[in-house]
Amino acid sequence: MKSERILKFVLSRKRPVTAAVVAQQFAISQSTAAKHLRSLYIAGRLTKTRTGKKIFWAETTTSMPVAVSDDNTIVQPRRSAPIEPAKPIWPDHLRVTSYPHGRGYED
Image 1: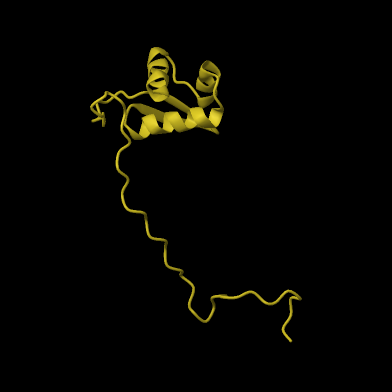
Image 2: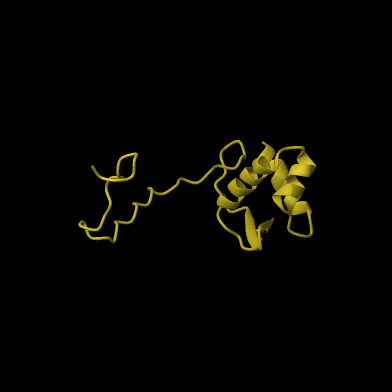
């Protein structure tokens, strides 16, 4: 429910907004506002632009397919399988597999 209200707020603005502006408008924490904005971005409803440390959120200019449920709420798209971690590039004889004991030297 709150994501739809945030989306309407962002779309009503002529300029891109930050999570701090949304947080102040809806009296929520900045991290909560950022989570809602991020979910709208994943759903394809918003675009984001990073300028330095700030992220500006704005209306999507292209028509992207949006996942919407039967009761007209935004649905999170399915995520793909997790990415496998990269294999180490060090040869086995150079890889440190254990740390020396607490005193820092071998007996």
